[in-house]
Image (cartoon, rainbow, N blue to C red):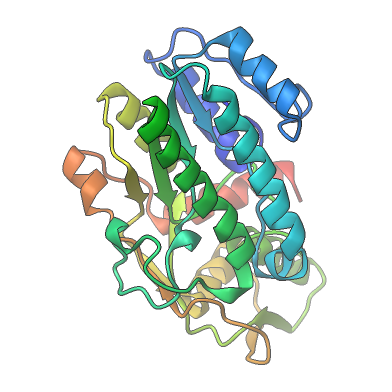
Length: 302
């Protein structure tokens, strides 16, 4: 398990530890192994000789971070993915579960977005460097499968949120960013709360434990597929999302949207029928997930 800290890694680790599926779970954090180093990455993989690698290691962030640190996002993610994948080449018995992102899909893809829409148009500009790094990982994996025979599954989760997320004001995704800033606005008795964009874009959000359970399901049922969308099946405008978070946080002020700031993709809703047809469905509703996330934030990050 690569990238076992943070939002995704900590959830996957807990889910697999609690299951009867894995007898020997090897966890790798950035303190233990520097995935920017090919030597360290290669040594870890060759010495542990795993049956399955789940690669959740990545540099992630919201619109502001993606748009202001564009070089960092493409270079860092390319380095991580290239080192991990190249280190697996000597052992084609390793099954690789690679965590991608729904941002790989074209800006103008027809919604709900199907796996076949992959590389079928231009990317959304604000996070295109991050998306290109994720696209490259998929293509490298496909080349490895063709040349060396590796089994590689690429999972495309929708927007994730939950415990252990990054609540940094400038680098967080929309849900943790709104929770943190709105909670602080409440504590400061602010009358207004300002939000980037018009509030009109539609988004889909998945509670991170549902992603983890989908991975457990894939491993348990030996599912092998090139690309799999992992979504919640619920979509919501940023405006309505902000209202839900206002209720969870109990902020009494007015929500003010700044339409001088970018919206990003106007709509992004995944077609998850392929994974649903295999038998997996999400369990946590958006309302439940927001309550759980805010509770974790209050107890751990506020």
